[in-house]
Amino acid sequence: MYNLLDVSGQTTHAMRENLMPRPHTFAGPALTRTALLPAVVEAALCLSAARVLLLAPYAVWSRTLGDGVTWHRADTSTKAAASRLVPRAIAVAAARMPVAMVCLPRAMAAHWMLRRRGVASVLHLGIRHLPGNGHAVLHAWLTVDGETLLGGAGAEGFVTLRRYG
Image 1 (cartoon, rainbow, N blue to C red):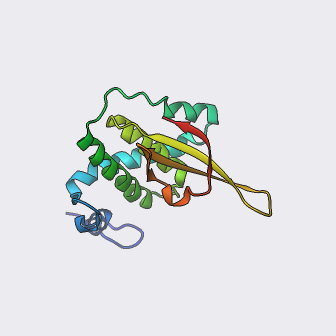
Image 2 (image 1 turned 30 degrees about the vertical axis):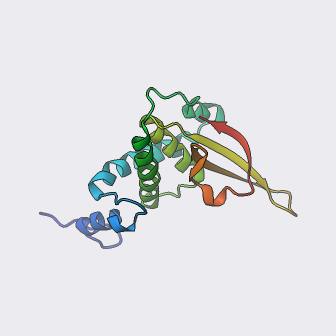
Image 3 (image 1 turned 45 degrees about the vertical axis):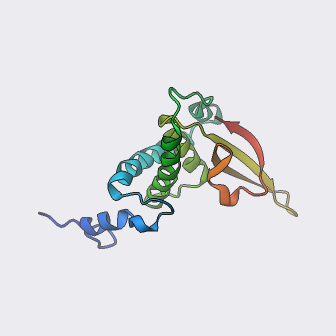
């Protein structure tokens, strides 16, 4: 078997070991590597798609966020599991992407992943004006049943411009 190296000098096996966090680092019941890996792959694909879509005009990429219609509704246990799995998968995948994944691609990817699982979520686009210089900062975050799931740490002080979902 060949021992491939990446630019940091790690072998592929060492990279695979570093890809997934240990199960004991999660709050609540542990998510195993086997359960998380497919979601991380899905998250990486969704993050990449979101990043590419954001090169298009707003009228194009905003249509991909839909009107909140899901084909089926998840039950409570599925919703709870997805609400734990999706943000973690997004965080793991985003940390390993070659370009920075800021709040909007993360929120878009999580919104798509949750919608695919039948979980209704709301993506918020907000603005906050900076005092003194007149500049504004934009931020995106995701909520499920009124609880902030992704991007909540930076959402305080932002006024929602638009909601999707």
